[in-house]
Length: 502
Length: 108
Image 1 (cartoon, rainbow over the protein chains, first blue to last red):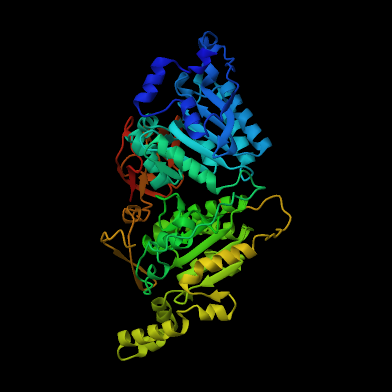
Image 2: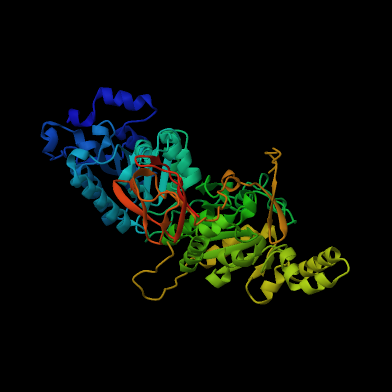
């Protein structure tokens, strides 16, 4: 037993520690509540015979599995042990993982997977491929039933990356996490391109460029505290609501709501300040903070209740919707919907990002994901239009037409088919062209259009806005809207499943 | 907010005639410029090795004729002409390694 607990032995452990990594068992203990971890299948051994494998003893077959408590919530957990044969995945290693996954799904508790593995155990051939497949299948089965969290604390390469990709949240740590399908060496041989592991699939790359990871940390310790924070916002499974916390007021001295958004729709501001001005204790857990920053997503509490927040970010790229921001928000919305988390949408956007690269990258298809996700969501949906909502962007950001339960607008909100300048140019083209001074005439017509249409009252006259509210009232009204929609239940038409554009 | 008074330099981003002040992310600034496809250039769609070249400068070819054989990713692929015409120039020879996008043959 002592042998099994030692993993790969002193030398391998020393190597692991030298690069700032904890051992697999230490990681589980650091993450879970003290003395709550119970390990299973410690004595499982591999059964491979080829390539002299029968002479090798691999403690626990390179993976630790068990159950425990995370901030008093029960969880199933596994951690690959890099000190044992590089954490390579063989058949019994995979069986241990799938067994704990089956447990998680049966017991309806969250699953946490700590990945630190060199990849498939080549000596076990097709059996290691089978192992991956069995894991992917279960990730998919569990999707939307229990929260699944992947923690990448080492290499995660080749087929192995698809398990995290199928889960809900991926945590990475700088200089430790490495994810890719084909590594730098293969790329060099086949394609002739040279790149370091860090540049190809390091933590920053996956947070900033690919959007594969959701949370970035500088150390394993920071990563574990992020996981605990996330766990506090989400329920155990899809039949529960997230735990309710004692309500707290926002830090209104620091985040004064009526001073954040400039009246001029062309001026930027940080929408996260608005979020912090309305949520409990001004505490906002941003998800995918570094990717597609023109949209902000994350969890907060309002009156003690978890909400998922989606907000355009005028600070970055004027807050436009594009391929990446649509994709980012759509997946988040689907998570919230699956786990009974009400959605609060804050709108301030000029429309979709124009460009050949966007069109060719499929902004139609990706933009459609956002429409799909909002339309499909049956959790309470509350929208606040802070300033401008133009064109397709107005529709996409959880308008009444996508069945928002409440749409509020601040007094300076502009709900229009496009910005006043563009609209005036089209509507009054003839007058502008015929004028002695077209520029002067354009200015007059823009002002005319602004006065008539750049306000929330045209949309309100059609009932597309339920109420025009003062910024200071926002939190109060959100609390009321959440309260009144707490028992919301809608049934969608009977179907096996929809076909979202992904 | 009040505590972070760092001056941010904003760029201008124009949409539908409206000029917004905002930050343009690096990825937006360095996005790939569109290059129209030139049907007269036969480029390598994947990096690989030239196994055989079937045409020479000045040779007349029909649409669908084999121009060369490219080996990449353990597969050999015949690269065929997408037009009928004359070969203007051949930039490759047998055994040569080509990178992705390398112009191998130019048609007149």
